[in-house]
Image (cartoon, rainbow, N blue to C red):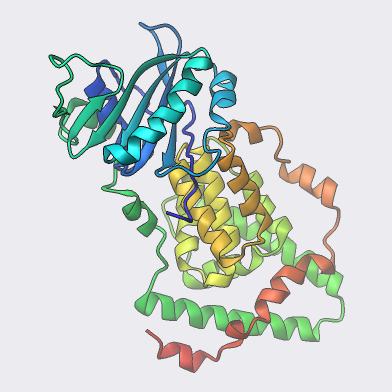
Amino acid sequence: MTTDIPASPVPPTSGPGLLLGSTEDFLGAVPYLMGFHPADSLIVIGLRGRRITGRLHLTVRWDLPLVAEAFDQIVPLLRKEGITRVIVVGYGPGPLVTPAVDAVTPLLRRSGVTLIDALRVEEGRYWSYTCSRSDCCPAGGTPYEREANAIAAQATVHGLVALPDRETLERLLDPVGGAARAAMRRTTARITRELLDRLARCEDIDGFAAEFVANGMFRVRGAIGTYASGGRLDDEQAARLGLELAVTRIRDEAWALITDETHDVHRRLWQDLTRRLEPRFVPPAASLLGVAAWRDGDCALAGIALTRARDIDPGYSMANLLTHALHHLLPPHVLKGRMPSPEELDREMGSPQAAWLLPMVALLEEPEALALEEPEASAG
């Protein structure tokens, strides 16, 4: 898939409490570590510690066939994360998987980590590249249970989910349609006209900016509280927040509030807005979803969200920054301590200025933003 993030590192928090003691256990765990059943993929599973007490620490996935220089960052990542042993698993037919396994295994061996096994998986069977004994590794492959296994039961207890495929995961971010889309378009068009009218009549643009930013940051915190209590924004609230997030200071307020304790709430909030907002307003919400998913160890969803943002606005800097981090296999903890707090943002950016509103005004003035309500009411 040309728009996919080619590698998805999963941080140490993945797979809580899963007891993995055999090849079948590891194969049973992979879909839950990734969030979906992989296909045409190469996966490296990294463990820390000694053989008896080693703990699964990270999982990295590449699409097959590989892109050039796909493995440039894998050895530095393994060293930085203290990985001592690895398992390589390729999903797909031999002509697709074998060249990738042949490319990565020498790198892993030279890095000093122990290669436990290298496997190919296809249609419910697996083959080992490291075992030539026909009594344990038959030429026709070894069958294994893909879904109804003990690891699946453990994973389910821990709240982990394995979707049928990556396309199913992508569909979780499909825009809403039908009556919900038509209603959101009408609401967005009305709010857009209101804002443009206020700006046209405004005599103190800096004062307007200060009020707008304060209201936007208040709305961000209110939205987080709403989703933390199991609620949901209505169309009016969602559309206004979508417009406000176009102002960098308001978006960064939301970014600064994503923590290890709140990332699940942020995932639900920004996933909802990514689906509901009019496309031109989606990049900030999709990028915030990317951060929350990344912090939660769901790099596949993070990559999909960031791709959505970049497809709409290829120059959106936040999405490009995070995409760069995923491409270079950076774990999410690298941002801890680097993202300013809301108070630090206030000190660094100073008082709101009229110039802060320019990205939002540009979106408001796009032709589709000025559509009349009546045509929108009959759409879809």
